[in-house]
Image 1: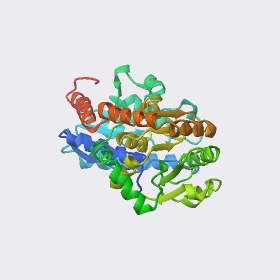
Image 2 (image 1 turned 45 degrees about the vertical axis):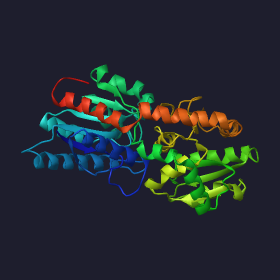
Image 3 (image 1 turned 180 degrees about the horizontal axis):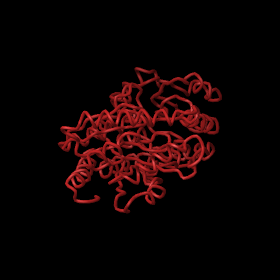
Image 4 (image 1 turned 135 degrees about the vertical axis):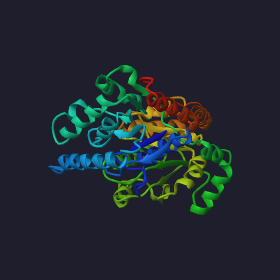
Length: 382
């Protein structure tokens, strides 16, 4: 069937990589693998940081204009379903509900959150638009269970809320895990890394906001950790505040730090496989694609217990979760796994098994196909 796809926060063809862009691409690929024809309906970014008066009104007007153009363009052959990815008060969908109403087609949202406390203030207009879109939705597919409680009351019926674990194509990561020794040897030589040390891997964009705060918590944790254990931090990431992030680690001995800069997506599986422990404080993280990638390569993680991170990292099974922002607790969790290589390896095996069972691409293809096919056939909510 023909499906119109839209990601108001960040379109899948955006030039800057991120977990959000990655999941948008994965959703499109999964729908395509199920045999559907997926068209990117618009690249309009509705994201609003709340600092520019009048921006919500301008975005709403742009959204109405885009919706009108799409309705005219598709009048002869409209899509059979509209699919919006990542909807919330800072990035509402000003386009999809109008198009879905015009053609009387199902409207589906994947990854939605709703924050009642944002009903007033700079995001009030986006908050109302997000609430209206969720009320219109024929299905809301939540990738993070933590979002369900506030979303559910907005839906016309409880069965319109559908859970789908975050997913990825795990094959490249499993393959990398099978050649861990070779990857570690090659990367140690290429980057002059001490192979005898435990590699603590952090993967994240370097930008202000929650990413920078996550790096700051990690820097404080490593200062607390100090010389306890023979470790090396390896950071894969770049961005506009790289200099500031590196300065945040000024209290960590420089010989224990390795900043790689941006690492291509097809090179990351080797790094996950070669490392000993993923470390990411995950301040206000939706669920963390990098954490899911690490788990897919059999890399245990120490992460912040925020958002949907517990949906990806099972505390005490495939890693350890810490109160977000607790640098001392984060250091203690790292130390506990550094001191117990056997436990670390067992967690890595559990991570591989959990991704294969709950987070692999094939399962998502089947689940998404079942949802959209039933809706398009007017069989009712999934």
